[in-house]
Length: 423
Image 1 (spheres, rainbow, N blue to C red):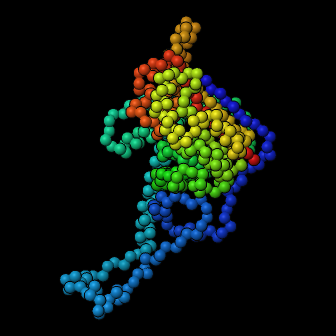
Image 2: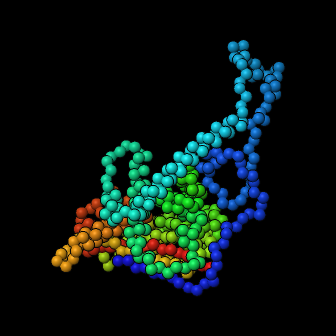
Image 3: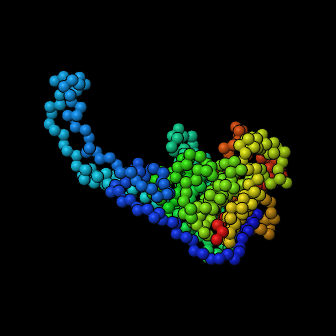
């Protein structure tokens, strides 16, 4: 079951403003950009670059050599009587470093292009292919890097399925000229996203600048269009972003990332950094299933292994009800805002329709889509709330809870919100 809500109004149409430029004189672009500079988190505010000290200005040996300084005397076998060292040629050195950096840049571009093609294949895949890739179980591996790579690939499949399996619901959406769509945006903000989600956004917006605001941002050397913005903590007070800079911002797990009293302040910061007509793309899922479908075994498991931790850390217990109100208070419910709500079963139901009147192929397609939606919903729930779980096993790994969910048709809802900044 999918519900789609579109918010319309008649505000004054204004073009999205160009990000402000500093009146200060811009420093000259350095001749070479080192890898250390590329990995340094960007500073979104203009500032002066301190000049580097010259390597040629070193103290002469005669300054340290004095007759009464015993540290300056060495035995004859330690004297340096060999031929003079070759004088360093800065021009040759810079040229060789530049060649290496160009080659590294080509390699990075190839990696981004490969992921870009992967994202396109994921978006075009059928429901059965998506389900097959999400259900794949890899053999045991001791290589931590390989395991992380496989997990990130599976999360990209989850994200692609989340945004594409019900894409036809947006076909009749009203076009709003003042709204900045992802295609129109020039700068994208990945708001406290994980590295897996940020890499997906980097490949999805391969031709745009993606700023990854995080305590552990992606490196520019991995994705050339990523600009890492390092913050010490997730807090409204640590938000080093210039106003009206971004056309689009994304957040997948915002309700679980900071205490609920700090959410309104953070949303106001997001409003400030968005251009007029820019949108925050927010995904919400409640920690608890829909109340009238929740059985005693599932309720007991969630209360014992999740709810206490959420209350202890002051996390929002009902984001689907509270976030729309907070977005309105932050002036993020402008013209073109949408809320798409999708309902999925905790365990996919086993339909037994009348085969005499129902096409067998349609039955199979519907069953695959229901199972895919259930798996994607469970993965989303684990991605958002899994860090607070204290149990050794997930609830879908316990047969008694699975049987209860199948009997009561326990269900969740997740919402994909497009919150547009008011004019």
